[in-house]
Image 1: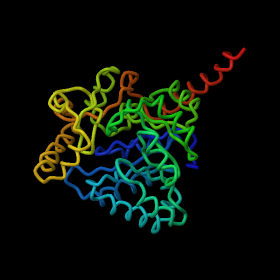
Image 2 (image 1 turned 180 degrees about the horizontal axis):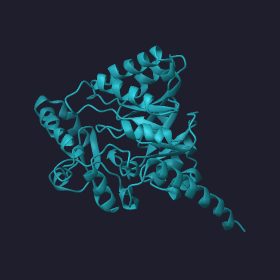
Image 3 (image 1 turned 90 degrees about the horizontal axis):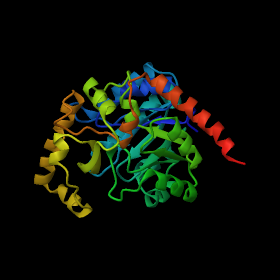
Length: 329
């Protein structure tokens, strides 16, 4: 479906940039994803166009983009229009920009737009529960089933990956990509055994040479263990972060009802002010802002190239899958 060599997708990691990372993942045989970024005082639409064109010029093979479609994400409709326009204007992008991963909201409006194009854009949506996966199964081309172990935005329900993946595979017709806690070949082999078509990794790709995250960010991921993250309150709901001074001050999680109240101007202004700390983190101040990271940080112990990560993951998965036959008498 995607035209990639290996069943590995790089997770979007907005609001941070993954432009160089996306190119490296695509060049290594996976699917690189350009993240939805909009925190640094730039026009998010022009910024996305620049990033897409950079990946096109610096990679060979298919790649995709992420669009957060939450109600608060007011730039999402314009980003959808941008993708459609760029593919219409550029024959190479029409061929290579194959996938849009939507998240954090309702995928129905973009799904309708993407299906009407020629060729149609492949559309995956991030789902944290079986309920959401079933709804997406009727709308999109694939499901990114993301368990509670994953870093970044999380659900209120807190369903773990080992439960969510078999449920989604058993109850949905569309391909299911497993996400949340994957960092090596053993995880890839396990995901395939559960019926997933492949895996999506985020935290593992942060700690790579090509990733544009600050070295302080990469190093703190490598130094962390599986108990060093916590789920706290984010702008779009719960969010998994590395524990630091920031999470000590933001340890409470609002209920869904309280979250809705954030539409009040005073609460929203306060929350938007807090988002400025993301820029500090991206520039290396990893103690005073939100450091997005999954529980898989415990298994990330080096900073190799993206190519080394992907090839090692696939090689180990192949060895493990072949060895499984010895368990059958």
